[in-house]
Image (tube, helix red, strand yellow):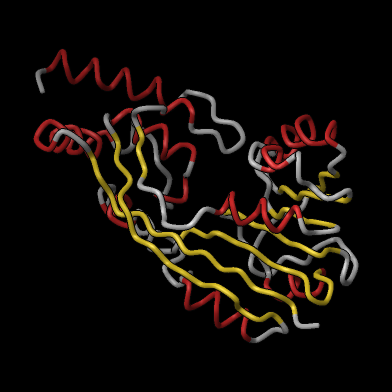
Length: 257
């Protein structure tokens, strides 16, 4: 990289760093961030379960962008939670007109849910932490739980490119299955998958890291990590694309009657 080219790239990266991110919407990276898809369809399974349920809870709905895609099959009582304030406001705007109650609630492995026992016949969850015991508690007998999760080793090689490590390496399919089997939930399906996530330019990496800050837990910024970004730029010029390993898993369980 020449001096002028380096300065131009640095300017572009800072612009990406300041680009707004809302909900869980990566449309800004359309054509620049390409991910392999797992062999299952979370949306397909969620739609099937929703259409057969009398009540449903969506944990960690983000900006509500995915839940509203199921508006034609949602049960009469559908509730969504969200813990990140900007996304909560966005979810209210998107989901309340559809008759969906949106509750502000943090998500974690220990979080208690602000609902009564056996309130829901279905709990769905995509890429949000959850307390297995609480999921079991709010499910009615025979109710279903569906979750797609990001493995704790997801994009570990991207974290390493910035001299960092993913914060939850313990969070694997095996960990979740062990937690589920300690409850009154019965695992009906469990599957894990490894694929590739590819970036067409370093600016796309910058935007992604600002949107998903836990990939670099020590705190990412263009100013702090400009050397790492330039290393990725040299790799991009050599390889044509920046590709990293993504890991997901899916679990469907049912509460015993």
